[in-house]
View 1 (spheres, rainbow, N blue to C red):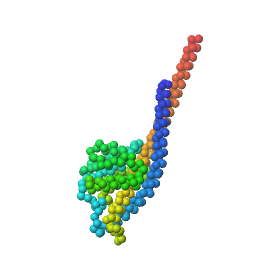
View 2 (tube, one colour):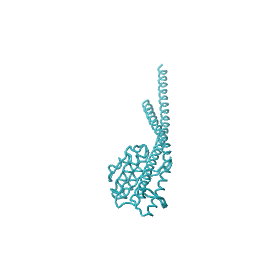
View 3 (spheres, one colour):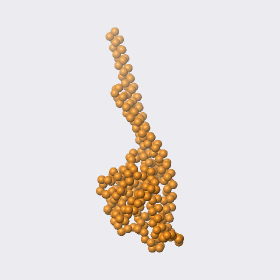
View 4 (spheres, rainbow, N blue to C red):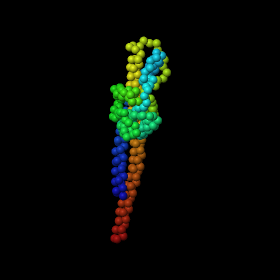
Length: 284
């Protein structure tokens, strides 16, 4: 009986240690979610404004008979799929949901190349049937414009030379308790209907279109990275909260078992003492 008490006591200590870790990770993730959410909400209006401006400029270019390959497509087969996943685990089904969505997309396309964002995507796809065209491991833990430009340049290098379209699979941040896996085409650029403008464009329409497309793509990729990071942290916070709650529940059960075991041991020892005392009285 004493061995069982010691065993339960050790388990209680182990669970308390794990709970300290999950509670700390929950607190860190909760703080980071607030920070990433603030940055994300500030970035969304810029991406929307750049998209609207590009739509109007594209409509103007179409009226003038200007055809741009980043808008109207290229005569090239093949598809690149950028998977924006995570570098670390302890975030529930977040990586597996993204890998599953990317796999389903790749199975529907021909001549697929994968760009793996995050260690979880890299480990999943490095041995898959599709070649890796690039990877971003431990790259966008803190998304910046420079990182977005690097990804944009890599995508532009693939487009038109190796592939004819590029899609991105990422998680959209709908709220701290709701995230959504999305599959969207990045190139050729998809735009809403725009309004042609009678404006003076310097130095010329094509050069201006090139510049604005570059700005829009950078902003959109940065927005995607921010959406993904905020979603990852939100999922990790939920996972760590669930783990902490489970640890609390287990501690309660173990403490109850520990108290019962101690009571049983004490009762058994008292019974042995009283039995021994009774035997001595009978002998006397």
